[in-house]
Length: 304
Picture 1: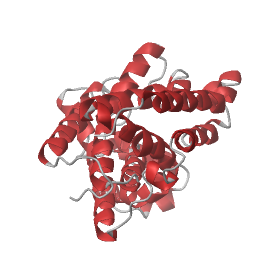
Picture 2: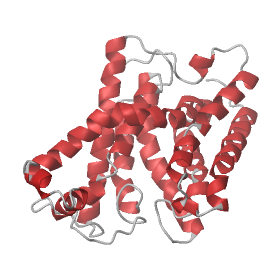
Picture 3: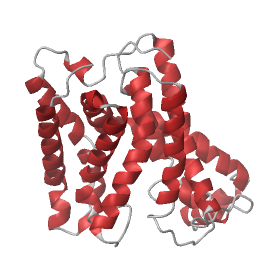
């Protein structure tokens, strides 16, 4: 087992956090998340981990291929890589749906799969003033199924932005932490990923106007839970590509919480969806099962 080197990890964390705050600084100086540039700046922020990993990797491992160090080099055998890419997409969509189901079991989220009142409300708002287009839509249940298909198809597009994060967290950081053991690596990388979101979270992103410390704890726990699933994908596949697609599919599934729930319900994100405690249950149990029944040591030539 490779010896753990703490300095590159410390440098990476400091650089990725510092650059994230720098990118988000305009939001803190003017209008917060209401800033017209908020979406663009948050997308730019997603590229920070990749930049940080590249810089630290070139300094700390000058003789190692950058593509290999970042987890970008392994594509062959192509069939195996594509299998993991598809698996990552379906697993991530399943995590999004599973979190809603478990939330409904605990009473913190109200599903409405029979009447789909939430989806109906969304469609009415989207096609307001255009009743002709609304009338041409298929049945609500067909649209509900199409939303899942849309998340799957949109995964590659969403993965473009997600790749910036995945190169940093799973491509570089996770593998540098693996000498500490799998569980410590999952926990530390998840906490780092969660706290890295602080520039946006402290402005109310995801959790609204709850105390900042509470929001950061929830975000870190969420990143540990879902990050563990992405970490298994990265370690099993030997590259970061499948994890990026899984991350992209997860982001593309964000609208599920409104489409499949009761219209007008007030959601407490500290309890519901993958951001809340009920949403951590499914990915944690899934990652335990994956690491237990399909264990493999990290390596670019790992076989399924």
